[in-house]
Image 1 (cartoon, rainbow, N blue to C red):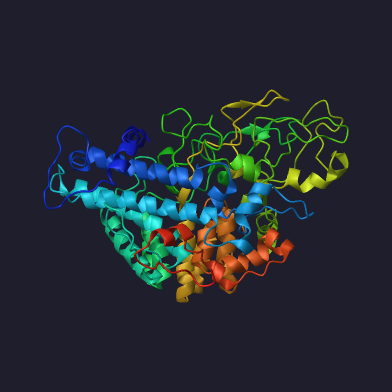
Image 2 (image 1 turned 60 degrees about the horizontal axis):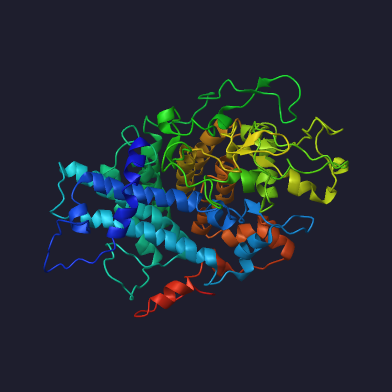
Length: 580
C-alpha cells in the first residue's frame, strides 16, 4: 500500500503526458521541461503510471460517487437490488432515471460513462506497454521490464473483460493513442477474448506472486483467475480448469475455515443493544472486517483488493465533497433508514455506532432473490453461515431509550408510517457495514458516530471462492458434473451448507452459489451478461421489472454502443448492437 500511495503523486502528470504527439522521424528529446520522452525513462515512472491506472479502477468502480449507476457492475438493479418497493412506493426519483431496463438506449448516461472508463484504462495500460520498449528507458534487467509490461497487459485484459462481456464486438486498441483518431472499427468479441488470452498468457509468466506484490496491486494469481474466465468464453474448458487450478493449488491460497484476524474475539449484545455482551461473528464475518481483507493481513483467500485508507493521502477521495469518499455501501445498499424513523408516538429512533450502517435515502432494496430464495435451498436457512445473523441482518429494533418500545423489534404496528416497513427494515448484508466507525459524522439524535454511509475496507476484486466457482463452471461445461459438484462443495462446506450432488449442478446453481458467496463483491451484471443470462434474471428476480411487467428482448443481454462514440468516429462506421 505504501508503495502504491508513494507513486500516486506522479499519476496525473503521467496520464496527461501519455496523450502527447511524438514525431517518429525527428526524435528531439527535450531536456528542460517534462515530456513523454524524458519522463518515461526509469522504472519509478512506470510504477507511477500503473498507480494511476489502479487509482482509476478503484475510483471508477467503487468511489466515483454515491449514485447507484456507478455501482451497477456489482448487480445493483439487476438481480441483487431493486428500486421499486413491493407495496408500489417508488424509490428515489433520480435513481429511476438511470436504470429502467426497458428504456436503455445509446444515449443512456451510465452506458457512456462506463464505456469511457474502460477505454481510459486501456489507454493508460497501452502507454506503459509501448513506452517500456523505448530504448531510452533505463531498465536494470529484462525481468524488471517484463514485470511492468505483464502487469499492464493484465490490467488491459481486465478492462476488456467488461467491454467484451457487456458490449460484445468492440474496438481493439493495442497501442498508445498519440493523436486524434476517428476511424475505429469493432473487433469481433471472440477475437477480443483471444487477445485477452494472449495478454494473460504473458502476464502469468512475469507478474509477481502475491507474497512479493505490494497491497492493492494484482498478483500473478489474478491473471490466472481472469485467464480461467476468458478460456470459458473461448470454449477452452480444459484451459480454464488449468488456469483456475494454478490459483487453487498455489500454497499461498486457501479458504479460511477458522476464526481469524482483528475481531475474532469480538463481543456484541445484539442489534437491540440490550442485554449482556456475547461472542459475535463467524469465519465468513471475519472475512469482511477491516484489517482482515488482504493477503498480507493473513487472509489467504484474498487474491486482489482495492485499497482504501482514510488516513493516508491518496487512500480515498475527499470525504468532504458531495458524492465523493469511500465505497458507500452502508448508505445505499445496507443502511435502510431504520435509524431515523419515528415510532407511532413520534419518538425518532437513534443511530448507533456498532454494526450499524448510516440511514439511507431509499435508493434501492435487496431483492427477495438474495434475501430469501437462495437461502431456502436444501433447507439450509439455519445452517448456511452466510445466512446467519452475523452476515445478514433481518431484525431491527427501537434503540432510543425514550421510546416506549425500546429494545423491541420494529414492527408495522409500532411504526408511525407502517407503509414504510420494508423500506426501513429491508435485510442488510453485514459484509458492507463497518463494525466500528471512524466518526467522520455524528448523529444529531444519539450523539454517536458514523461515517456518512462510507466504508473504508480494502474491498475484494477477486477472492478464492470465485476461482473455485469458475473451475466448477468450466468442469460443468466440459461434462464433468462430479468435478463441478466437488468444487462447489468446497465453497459450501466452508459455509456449513448441505453438499450438492451431480444432479443438482447446472448454470443456475452456479449463479446461485455465486450470489450466496460473492454478493456485492463479484461484478454480477458482467457475469450475467457473459453468460447471456441478464434478461432472464431481470425477468425472474428484478422486482421493478416484474412489477411493471416489462417484457425485455434478448438483445438487452448486450449494452448499446454509445451514441457519442459513434458520432465522434466520423471516418468509419462503428455500427450498433442489434435491437438498439
